[in-house]
Length: 368
Image (tube, rainbow, N blue to C red):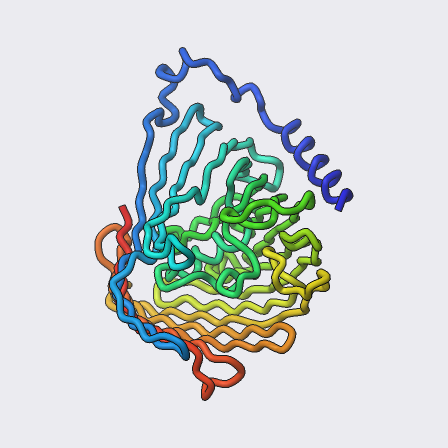
C-alpha cells in the first residue's frame, strides 16, 4: 500500500507544479472586484417522496415515506477555488431511533480547478468529504437513483462518498455534439474522462476503523466520438482493505459499456471482486469472500423524452449467496428535470421462484 502513497504524492506534486498557482490568492479585497465568478452562496435541493407497498418473507408494509433528501450549498471564493456542502436527509429504519428523520453530511469539500495539463483538460481536485470515482458517474447514466441505489452500492460493495482526495478531468477537449451535451450529464471529454483518488474506505456514514486507505479509480474512453459520441467504455477498480480491524482484502475490477442518445440509454456492467468496503464480506478471521456479478440497464424515451420506460436486471453472488433483482418502471418528467415514477422491484435468492422481497411504489423526485 505504501507504493500507492508514493505514486499519489508524485502525481499530485507534478500536477500542482504544472498548475498556475498565481491564480490561487486569498485576497479578500479582490473578491468583490473580480467579475469572473459568482461570490454568492447558491442553493440546490433534491427530494425523493413516495408511497410504497413492501412485501417480504417477514413483513408486509404500506407507507408514505421520505426515501431521500439532499440540500446543497456552494460558494466560490476565486475563479479556481470553491466549496460544496451537501446535507443528506433520510428516514431512520433501525434501532431505538427508528422513525426519526436523520440529517448527516454527504459532501463537504474544497474544490480547486487546475489549468489544462497537456491532454488532460477541465481538471480539478476535491479534498474533504468527496465524490468517489465510480458511483456518481454511473448515476449520470442511470437517472433513477430515486428508485434506489446503483448496482455496487445496492450490494454494499462500496459507497458514493468518502473522506479523502479525488482528482478528476477530461481526456481532450469537450465534445461538440450538442445533443449529447444537452441530454447527458456524464463528463463531456472528446476522448473520455477519468477520476482517481485515495480514501478512508468505509464511506461517508462509517467511522474509520483502520489505518489503511483505499485507492480507487475510473477511466472512461469515448472511442467513436465523431460518429457515435454517446458510446463510452469504462473501467473502474478498487484496491484496499475492508473497514474492520481484521483488515480483510477489498479489491475489485469492473468493466462497463454504455450508450446514450435522444431515444434510449443502455448500459451493461460486469463486476468481479474480493470483499467489500465495510469488511463484512469476510469470515471471522478476515478472509474475504470472492464475489462477482453483472447489471444491465435500459431506458427508452418517448414523447420528446417526457415519458420514459426503464428496466434493470442485477445478478450478484458471494460465497454461497446468490441474488437476482429485476426492476421495471415508467417515468413522467416535468419542470426542472423533476419526475414522477411508478416501479416494481423484485428481489430473489437463487431463483425467482424463491421470492424474497417485492416492492411496488409511486415516487416523486423534486429538483430545485
